[in-house]
Amino acid sequence: MTAALLLRRTVTATLALSALALGACDRAATAPEVAPDVVIAEMIMVDDGGTAIFSHIDHWHGFPVVPASGSVSLQKYFVARGTSADDHDMPSRDQWFTLADKARDIRVVVTIQDTTLARWTGDRVNGRLEGRGRRGASSMTVRVLRNNTTLKEFPPLSFTVR
Image 1 (cartoon, rainbow, N blue to C red):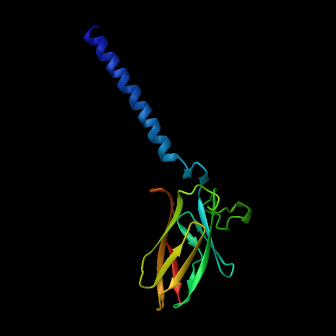
Image 2 (tube, rainbow, N blue to C red):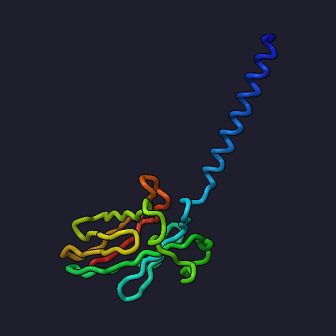
Image 3 (cartoon, rainbow, N blue to C red):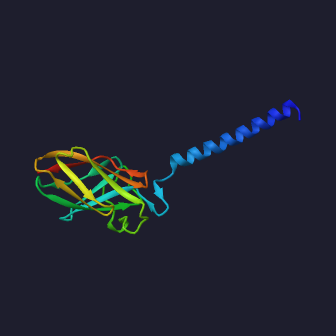
């Protein structure tokens, strides 16, 4: 085999591998947030009184209010398809689903910014925001994980303790 033929084969193989790698990278960048049995675009939380709070791309519509020495229950729902940036209506109820019947390795993690003000307990379907005795405001982050991989992270959600 001549040096020129060997060089041509090496360059061809390198270009083919580069094209495959770029194609895989492009697919990963545009892939939806999906697990084998769940696609999540937005989240809805419904409190004890039936008030719904919902995420919309980079913000939330509504916020939880919790008594300073009390708590509020929040049921968690999700939708697979979000609305457009100009559509600020809550997703229709027929689109909502819970994680109750989804794979057991999918969980919801809620982190409170100011843990002296409130604390969170709950599972992937229901949660409880508990006031810790003083009034104020803070925020929480909500992430949906499959094992240790983040499937979806929602924008920070503000809440008030009264």
